[in-house]
Each structure stands twice: as C-alpha cells, then as structure tokens.
Length: 68
Image 1 (cartoon, rainbow, N blue to C red):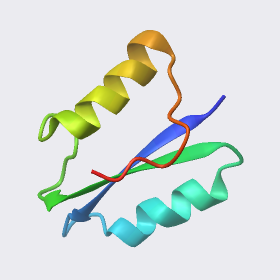
Image 2: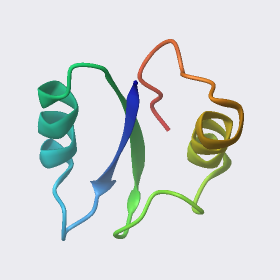
Image 3: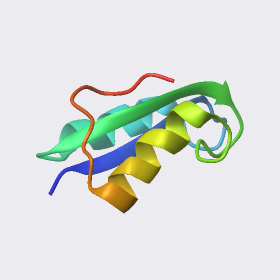
Image 4: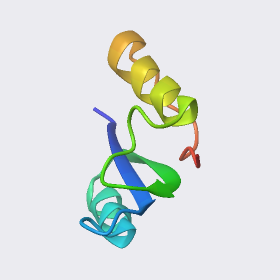
C-alpha cells in the first residue's frame, strides 16, 4: 500500500530532511509537507488534515506530494 509520510519544515525535533529520506526509502510513499512550526503537522492546517482524513477514511491517495 501507499504510505503517507508527514514532514514539517519547522520541526526542530524531527528535521524535515528525515521525512524526505524516509519517503524516499519506501517503495510507495507520498510526502505531505507542511510549512509551519512545531513537532506535529496534523491538526494545524486544513491542507494537511484534508489529505490525511481522505487517506484514512476514504482510502484516497493524493496524485502528487501535497505541499501545505
């Protein structure tokens, strides 16, 4: 299955580059990028929430890597 990897460009605890690397290691992955501060991405912007909710509830896989 396709895996969503969430990466936050402003996360000091988990560098965004790590999210990029993990998504690159997985055979089928979509990287959801969030341009904000803090350690989480979900619950901070509708852009991320909509992608994650659609994936978890409706099994909708984004065509491209969402950039929020």
